[in-house]
Structure formats: structure tokens, C-alpha cells
Amino acid sequence: MVQADEADAAHPYRWAILLGVWLVYFSFGVTTVSMAPLVPHIVRDLGMSYAEMGFVLGGWQLVYIATAAPCGIVIDRWGPRAGLLLSALFIAMSAGLRANADDFWTLLFAVGLFGIGGPMVSIGAPKLMGLWFKGSERGMAMGIYVTGPAMGGIVSYALTNSVLMPYFEQDWRSVLLLFAGIALACGAAWLVISAHPRAREIERELKAQPKERQLAVFAKLLAMPSVQVMLVMSVGIFFFNHGLNNWLPELLRHSGMSAAQAGMWAALPTAVGVAGALIIPRLATPERRLAILAGLFAAAGLAAILLLTENPAAMTIGLIVQGIARSSMMTVMVLLLMEMKDVGSRYTGAASGLFFSAAEVGGVLGPLTLGAVYDATGDFSPALVLLSVIMAGLVLLLVPLRRRLV
Image (cartoon, rainbow, N blue to C red; front, side, top):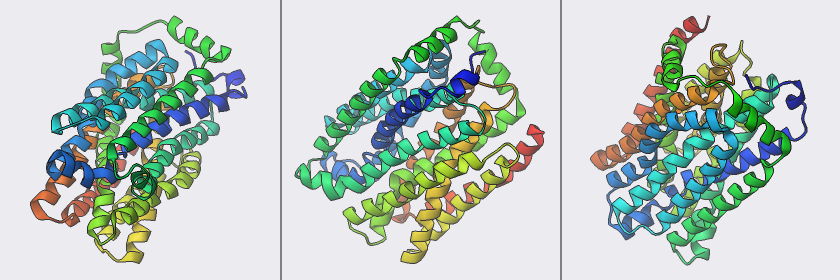
């Protein structure tokens, strides 16, 4: 089994590999939330309803559900080096085509392409951490790379309406083309970084491994009760993360902020989350993981309640708490999954593929549900209550998960 041996775990180039992963994940984060600050402009120019925009915002997750498991197979067989390069190319293509969309369907197609590139980095990143890092350093490395999409989100939220839209004379298409260029640049950087001799040697070792029938691997993983519970929990986490992430600027705008103010404040959870992502995964040692997850789920539910108040102080606390929870929930869950004794680095790709396929069911339902609820009620409050209830349910699911991990 190819995994982080003592030499690789001490190899100084592992930090360059981590940088390359961070860059690709940065482009992922930029593109994931690139349309959220632009919703009013896109809806107006393309003649779409908020429900249609909610479907578009969740459209790539539909594709992700179908492609994550096959992408896991590709990562396990061909290696994460090729996977991350393909990821960057599909991300750039998606952003570029969004800029050229002229109606609901062409925009939906463009966003859907992101669902092919997304799983490649979501699955390839933990695979690489398993190959280059070990012990507590692995949790730290995973915490570092998830700051990549966080920083990408900050760029999209904070700069789109305050800097980029004025610079491009309110042309949202030019903003998306810029983001496409960022993704291409990150892909080129990864291609150079991953050309290191040891990285290529690891790829050859992966390809030389005995291959099992993938259906048998999936059946083995799905038969594990702990994996079954974690798949259900992943749906709830992504429902919360993607639903609130995509609609947060609009939610804040409807509380009385301008578009520029809403974009800046929507970046606050992501900025706070950077610090959380650097600290919490490293603290999540095996004996602490379930307790930390319980705290993160409870914090996320509290954040949704605080956003209901429309009180500036309470909303600020809610945004901070949300950022801490959002940045670390999935990282700790994936760390728990990949270090299960029956998964390990050999099956990390396949297990992550199943995990993210299930998670993106919530990723689709979250933005779609929040958009539909707003269309039906003219208010985001019912959706925020729903999000808090879902997070309370995840706390309860930790009880059967603990029994199955013993």
C-alpha cells in the first residue's frame, strides 16, 4: 500500500505539494461562490427567477453526485497529480462559459461543468495528504489546504462588488472571465510543482498497485455501518454549507445592507474560518474527534438562529460562529473517514468519492431549498430555522456513529 512512509513524511518537498493543492483549491473556492455576489445582476440580465437561480447555484452539485465516485476511481488508479490538473482545467472552463451564458440553460450547463472538476480536487487533496503526511501533521496539512477555498471565497465575496464590478464598469461577465484566468494559472502552477521526481515516483507506485474491482470496493465500504452513518451526516453538512454559502450575500442584503456591504460581511465567516481551519483539524485527535464534531454542529445551528435576529451584534457573532464551524466540519469528517482502519490511504479515493457523492445531495438541496423558500415566503427566516434543526439532528447522529466506531 502506498502511503506516507518515514521518508516522505519528512521530505521537505511535501510543503510544495501542499502549496500546489492549496492553489487549486483556491481556484475552486473563487469559482464556487463567484456567482453569489452577482445574483442580482445575473437574474436581471438573463431574466431568471430566484428559484431558477437557486437551481443553477446547486446545479454543479447534481453533476458532482454522479461524478464523485468515478473520480475517486480515477484518483485511486491514475493518481492525484493528473486529477488535480484536470480539476483546474474544468474549473476554468466552467467560469469561462458562465461569462458567456445568455439564458438559464446555458448558465446551468456552464455551472454543471464545475461538477466534474470539483470532485477531482475534493478527493485528490486528502489522498495527497495521506501520501505525503502522517500523524498529527496530516490533520494540520488538511487544515491548511482547506484555507485555499476559504481564501478564494473571501476574494469573491469581498472584492466582487466593491472592487471588480466598478473596475469592469458593472460587467459581471468580465469578472467571471478573470476568475477563469485565475483557475488556469493555478493549474499551471500545480503542473510545475507536481513534476518533482518523488511525486512522479509515487504516481508510478500507485499505478503498479494490484487493482481490485471497484464495485467490490464500493460494496465493502457501503457495508460498513460507520460509513453509512457518515454518508447521511455528510448530506446535512453540505445542505447547511452550500445553502447558506450561496445565499448569504442576498440574506444580508435583505437585512438592510447594500450589495457591497453584504459582500464584505459575507466574507467575514470565511476569513474567520481560515483561523479555525488551521487550528481545529490539528486538535481533532482520534479521542477528541466526535466531541469536536458535536461542538461544530451545535455552533452551526446557533449561527443560523443568530442570523434570524437581524440585530447587528447578534448577526456579527452568528457570522463568526458560522465561519468557525463551516471551515472545519467537513475536514474533521474526512480525517475521520480516511483514518478508519478498513479505509486507509489505499481506499481514500473511493471512500471520499462515496462520501462527497452523498454530501452533494445536500449541496444541491441546500441552495435550491433556500431559493424556493424565499420565493414562497419572501423571507429567509423559515430557511434559517430549517438549517438549525438539521444541525441539531447531526449532533444526535453522533451517538450511533460513536457506537459503530468502537
